[in-house]
Length: 351
Image (cartoon, rainbow, N blue to C red):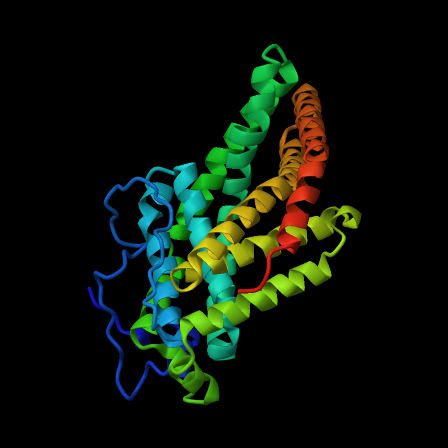
């Protein structure tokens, strides 16, 4: 059923007004375009994002609409799996979609009024925070602890750790599902849809708005990617000397550039974009070993704190120590390849 923007909170009405969506009357939302989190959901298998198609002559204004729409569709396509089935893949894909949305908002920062961008970004960040514990536990169980536990099948400590992790996983997915079908997430979905329908980023009618309709997506993407790549190469020049926190920051920066390549691949030189995307993916995966170690240590710490004092807690702690040590060794073993991939990225030229 169509809903009026004016029916929402004062904050949302103010956002809609700043977006240029309230012009003396309430704006009605098309109820069928995107699935509402609060509405009954038809069960659907989780799915990855679909390739984004931009026409060769697309403007930046076109790109904002197409790319943000794609992020929202990706997010909505995985709601059923995340909410109804509490599927780890569905929850992960919702998180990927929200991260891609935040990355797009950053890329288009100059062309979106600050009040809109801050609100959209803060809501996406809040929803990500509700899904984060579930994702950490999914990764910990399936990718980090399970391989170690299977290799040491007689370990009482690892068995206790897995039981504690699975119990926490169920609770975390309940929290995530509640957030995804809650009022705040539903309101956020409606807000993004209304913003897209009304091309809210044009609200100010200023120079940035005029630029977004005259600059081509191809021109913007080359300029943006060249700037990002140059910044990464300068800030993280000597990858071998970076500490753990700096390498984590590098991984995030690499991921954002990779998202941008995927957003604009249709208007970029095909071979060069494909080659860069492959290098970025490999580097991101390799740097991910350090992230795995961080997730393992953070998750084990939380599980130990949640386990009653005594033998069970000691076993959870011991099992966690085994898992963390295994992934610390994996991160160390990945070091030579990380350096090799970094040097390969540094050789990539401009678009």
